[in-house]
Image (cartoon, rainbow over all chains, first blue to last red; front, side, top):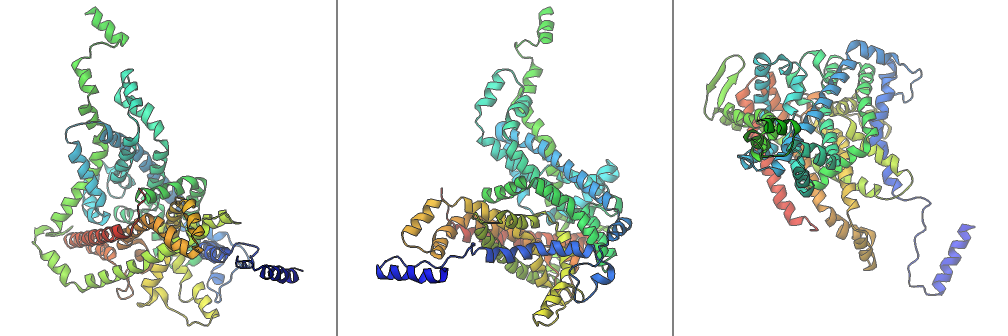
Length: 303
Length: 311
């Protein structure tokens, strides 16, 4: 039916000398699916393969050609992995470090960013210049002295922030130059009139910040929180240097150590990997809007 | 006397005391607000910059303490064949990873920048790679590319390609790391490009269509220039990260086989925390800093000429 009607329409058009070129026959779906479907398969396949392997038996995982669907789903890999390494402990450590780091950053960067944006005080320009300079320096330059300082602090000041304690993973990142700069830039765009009228009514400077400025900055603070959380959660190099005892390890470090000890036990490794991955995937999808907006914001801010 | 007590107790606004004036001043509040945050940054961010510069002129280890050696560390760096290899691997890696990620991100973002069926699934799949840590990513890819049992070799055998050694082969390992990191960063590039695409005004594309531009021409002449700030950002950001590659190398190859994947930061880590040559490692760190500064400066300089800013 369609096959016969199409040439007829074309014939009519030719007869009418229609100047508009004949449109190509349209697919019943967008041709972009030809790009998106293979891309999505590539993007998702590692996740899928990870889960499949984590549910197979050892001989199935090492079978060649690979077995795509396990014959019997073996959840025991998960309990075996939990028995071999304290993944719950790693998870709690990661959560404590990430949440504390985010809270510290929100408080300290808000205070400092606001002062740099609004107050004139002795040494402001110099201090701000120093902070901006640290922003450019890669972590590899500072990590050796940071290790020495952290070690010294643990011995001489407070064991909880020294080497081999999760405090050592929080304190050096409790405030970031990026956070201070990011919030200062935002605070400078706010109209100063609200703050001035609150001051006239007798509010202290801290009250103005907490009651007037912070509510206006909520989206900005959410962005900073999301970025700090991702950074802290995925940080590997500093924990690798600062922590060696299993009890203080975060998920990436715990998982890497687990891989070092069981590098050929693929089913166990994949079960451990799934357990390390799932909490972040859940958080990410619940707050996907925030994470995506935050990453997009850094991109747009950088342009 | 009574009056002042009343005033203080009743908190009536009156002439502020000297103490109050200080507590309310910009000087005092400025310093009080910045001190905690700035202290952290000075201690862990600023002081170490100078300290590691000092270290780089010393021969220091945990065992023997420090002795000044002048430029010896930098001289060693110039003559160290491993540093030469590490620079080469770092640059090859960067030259493949950065354009690869940008192209993948651009293609997917353009494909996803439309209302078609299943778009939420496609976007979510791209975003999911942002939630995976470098360590999880590396472990999965080691398994996918396992020479004996990996599914990639199985796929190769299916299409008649010879079996590969991948991460065990000095000539292939670096490229496997390129593949896994492109996979891991694609979501990031997609998000940045999608946000930038949303800022391309529809009216410009319509004007181009009216002027007779086909979709490809409109993309090249309108969309791509409008995306150039995002492209410059991604190029700089991805390059900085690429030059600092470490996690995947540490996990999958430890710099091997035969130093084939020894990149600068891995060598630096090895010197600092396996060999405890803090002085030499600091010199490598400063060299890395220099490389990053130069490459980023060149990118900005070149980028300025081809970047189109609307405002």
